[in-house]
Amino acid sequence: MSNLLEYKCPCCGGAISFDSTLQKMKCPYCDTEFDVETLQNYDQVLNNTAEETMHWDSSNAGSEWSVGEQENMRVYVCNSCGGTIIGDLNTAATSCPYCGNPVVMTNMLAGNLKPDYIIPFRLNKEAAIQGLKKHLTGKRLLPKIFKDENHINEIKGMYVPFWLFSTDANANINYAATKSRTWSDRNYIYTETSHYSVYRAGSLSFDSVPVDGSAKIADNLMQSIEPFNMSDAVDFQTAYLAGYFADKYDVDLDACIDIANERIKRSTETAFASTVVGYESVLPQSSSVNFSNGIAKYALYPVWFLNTTWNGQQYSFAMNGQTGKFVGDLPVDKGKATWMTFLIGLISSAAIFGIAWALKYFGIL
Image (cartoon, rainbow, N blue to C red):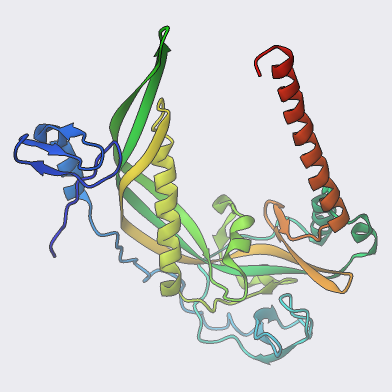
């Protein structure tokens, strides 16, 4: 494979080339000149940039069910939305936590990988109810009547399937940074801006980066209730499912790899950027993040799902069954929102008027 290297100006980001007359590298956009020797390190950085690919070792993700483990488990399928829920022999027909419609027992769980780990529920149903009440507290734009009239239709404790990705990330990142100083004399105000090319390289290790394995649950919803603490994870046993539901994965490992790679890359770039300090502006110019030693696992994480109804509409919430982190959309009182917008506008106008009056009063205007 051929590698195409493009030099970019650290000052303006434009492509720079060699000027044979000057015997220097020159940017045609801002006319900045560079000695060839100055860009030797930059050349090495570009040559180190490799394709961001990774082959994940999935041979240890999940394991085969042992004899007898599936005997006490049943699968329920929602006839309305197709949601799949795993219960035990004591689970009767119930309602779907996704759409609220009845689910019907169909067949034994078969043909799926057994999870490697499970994080048991630490918080019970009462904690989920209290979490909703706390979530409603302090919301200024929430209709007051919502708290009084809304009622919880259902609360379901569910083990949600997650694929877990562990890897080492090796990164080479270049930044364009600036520092400025200003001074003046009787006639002019001067500003001097210095431009810097900042280079960062190193490795980070990531352990058990989760990606939701259920197509029926929004990925951003599950990310919103993170993190889950893997120190509480134990080897999977069907006994932990008693009294709860468990959704089996319907998004396979391969379909989750791109999401995991993007999360790991974004986290790596954020961590590296936090080390570039002391500059007035910092902009990434090039980034190469490569993965190695990738291992994938399969786990079930505890989540409480709550559905409430108000004014003919259904509102859904989710709570981390381990930490209690609570998320969910709420209705907005349009009257309050309009009044708040008017009040903010009034305050802003008053502030502008006050500044203008002060400037005029002191003879500045």
